[in-house]
Amino acid sequence: MEDMQVSMYQLYRDMLTSYLEDKSEHALYHAQQFSKQMMEQDMSPEETVSLHLSVFQDIAHDLPEEVKDSFDLLVEVMIGYGLAYREHQSLRDRQQELESELNVAAEMQRTLLPERRIDLDGVDFGVVSVPAGKMSGDYYHYDLDEHGNLAIAVADVIGKGVPAAMSMSMIKYAMDTLTNNQMQPGFVLESLNRVVERNIDEDMFITMMYGVYHPDKHHFYFASAGHEPGFFYHASTDTFETLEEKGLVLGVFPRVAYKEQSFELSPGDFVVFLSDGVTESRVDGEFIEREQITDMIRERLHLSAQEIVDEIFQELEKAQEFQLRDDFTLMLLRREV
Image (tube, rainbow, N blue to C red; front, side):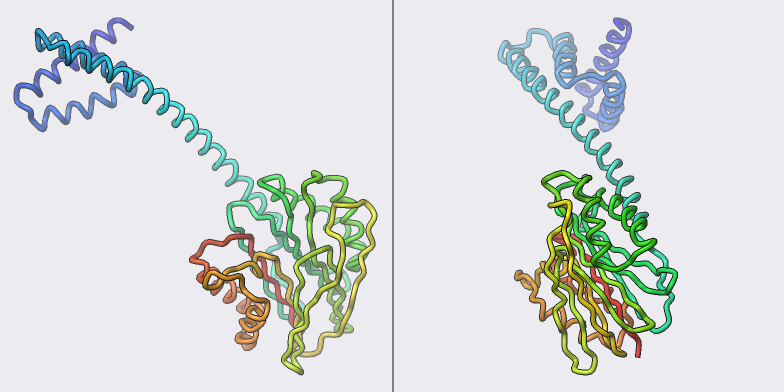
């Protein structure tokens, strides 16, 4: 260790002597290379200042006391700087570690969402879901049962951070189990509520809109657990109706009954499910009105369901300068003409 210190001292002395003699760019280049050696030796800023003072005193004799005293002050400054810098480095390393963990969790979360296309005669379906950050509190679901009935759902986990977002895994596996045998909205929400109530923290809860379309009868059944109301579009009158069925959010009480409504989808009619990240989008600094959303949909009736939801997301994202304030999920199910 002492030999290393002697070697560093001699290197620095030669470098400083050379610079003071000719002040060349070559000497400055050597200084940059020397800094890499300092890092390899894990030299602190105060040790570097002390090394400079020792070498400078050896080269320049009879230094004024003011110069020596100024270096004492500089050493104290560098001690504080070194401590702060090392703390900053530690925090940055921890932040990078957390960032890596979040990336893994976000990728796992994406695998929970359905990806396969809906292949059902007479049905046009589209969905877009984009998180405001790495992790999303929104969850969407769609699935066909053995009879060709199509179940759709949009949920929003109300809570904080990763635990809230990771509740999606519980929702997914619970729904996969529940909907294997029974897809009626009231039953699914009642059963899911019991699962959620037993497994999430008291400060968290989940809203959900769940619906099932029976293409043989063209009937759509839905129920809500305190979720953002959707829309029902009547093609014959070119009007939108609000889909709002009051129901308690999931996870508050173990036994809750959820009422369901049903209506017929005529050719060209469609259902819209969405999260509050859509209705809380801002346009010109103001929250968007629900009527504005329906106007945006109406302007795109000539497009496919997937094109409609994609274009609306792109327009609202642009209006917010590409900075989503909340997770954004928009789903559309249309009976084709």
